[in-house]
Image (cartoon, rainbow, N blue to C red; front, side, top):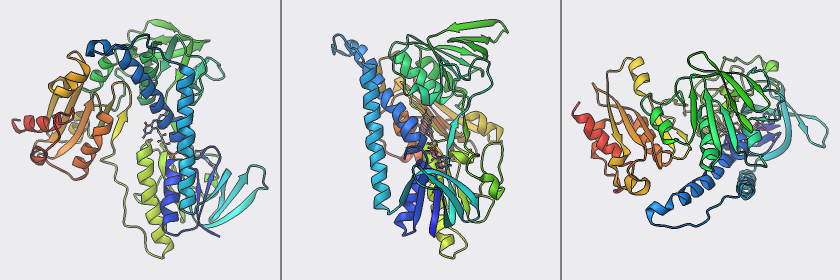
Length: 461
Ligand SMILES: Cc1cc2nc3c(=O)[nH]c(=O)nc-3n(C[C@H](O)[C@H](O)[C@H](O)COP(=O)(O)OP(=O)(O)OC[C@H]3O[C@@H](n4cnc5c(N)ncnc54)[C@H](O)[C@@H]3O)c2cc1C
């Protein structure tokens, strides 16, 4: 009998396994694919590795104006892909090592819940068996979503985010369907390497959850990409994408390859959810703020809950679930930790990157706040101008509640945004006011010291 069986070895599954193992719980972790899940194998890590190579290439191409000559700059797609794979495999081995250290039993196989405290495990090359446990954590993640666009399914010229990470030949022309985070990151990667990239997006702006003033800044910064906004894809024939534009006219894009980046769906089926009749919403498995699912002895964490499809959210959900499982197994009424959703940062790792945390101005207004906002062009930063030139696009925006001065949101487009945004998460988590931010001392010259200037700007509103 195990204390806990965890289904899925992505960020949610392996982080919970580690925390519970460290607490001395006997943990069985079952993973049907690769340890590390989507994030390590076909998500965060491989995309950021490739984007870094693309960034080096793009910087080398424009190094001349900064006084550095790099003659005959070339990129080698095959070597970029090999480096990506090396990074993934080394980090995967690192997670396996962490599991060993935490004394987690790992099975490479598929798991399905058979009933309360019972999980069937089909291990490759071994007879199927039932594992008994006191608690089950569902961490089955999510998969790319393929909408019913004629010509999309089964078309060898159409890849999803997983397929494109195995691409052998670098395309001359790429059409990306979907201008969300994944679509924009791939569009930035390929366009930075010289591919002719078009993005067809149904909404009127890219990355629809971004602040309405910040998304256009990112779009303008990604100026090598042809944006087709407010356009609906009608069909795909080979690698030609037919769509209806904003005015209703039928248009098409001829490409060599199509990337379908239309979203992801939680994996809510195929692991026995029906055996426990777990509550599900349109998003995913429903949990409370301790990550308890609707059946006793069952928890869920990560993308499968559909609440926030981000690896760092998965980590935190896993930690909250692990604390609650541990306390419950100790006979207590539950853990003291709670999942909080208000200060989860996000990032788009395009070149340049963008990041944000908390409410956009539009969300704050919709929630009834009388807002005060400050927006500063990043060219006001000496470091930004020195590193990017005086034409580069970038902006920081601070959203606050006028009455109390509390900071509600921080949004940035421009270099290092994804590295700096944790500071914004701390501001919001601690419910800091603009006056307190003004008293912080930030290093100079940095790009994101501008958030203090934004806080000073708010004083005058
Ligand atoms: C291209 C791309 C880029 C991304 N970039 C970022 C980023 O930069 N930052 C970020 O925060 N997020 C990013 N994400 C999202 C991130 O990858 C996910 O939010 C994260 O992986 C979710 O973790 P998880 O553990 O919930 O699920 P997953 O990582 O999907 O892991 C679930 C695991 O469960 C296994 N599994 C499923 N069913 C069973 C079963 N029945 N038995 C055994 N095993 C099973 C699967 O094989 C999988 O390994 C990206 C995603 C994609 C696709």
